[in-house]
Amino acid sequence: MGEGVEWALHSCLNLAWAEADGAVSAAKLAAIFDLPPAYLNKQLQALVRAGILTSSSGPRGGFRLARDLADITVMDVVAAIEGPQEAFRCQEILRNGPTGRDGVDYREHCAISKTMRRAELAWRRELAARTLAELRDEVEAASPGSPGAYRRRFAELK
Image (cartoon, rainbow, N blue to C red; front, side, top):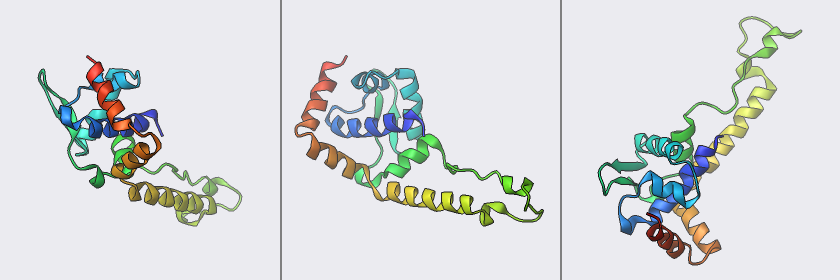
């Protein structure tokens, strides 16, 4: 999983804390964690295409949440950034091994492939069960004052 997922998740939480300020530019979001604005902008555009964020242009433009955090799962963000493809892709190398046979779908019969698919399903279910609202609440509980600290940080950034 690429670093863009982490950046996208943090950006969504930051947008939740900045909502009173309206749209936030990619440059301002990038400045919070000293990220490259152009690359973060690509992640933010992927979130717009997925319907997680909206964007507007102009001097007061930028990004904002398209939905309530309770309606966005961690899996929504991961899929928006990484795409829907499976993390493990069975190449059916058993077909070329000593017991390989034509006409067998080794993705369905290989113990390794089945194990990896079960693990991925569990991973996807866990991410789909966690909303960004839950993450925000967890961050705020672990870091009292975090919404205010992030709002102050937004105000300090140009």
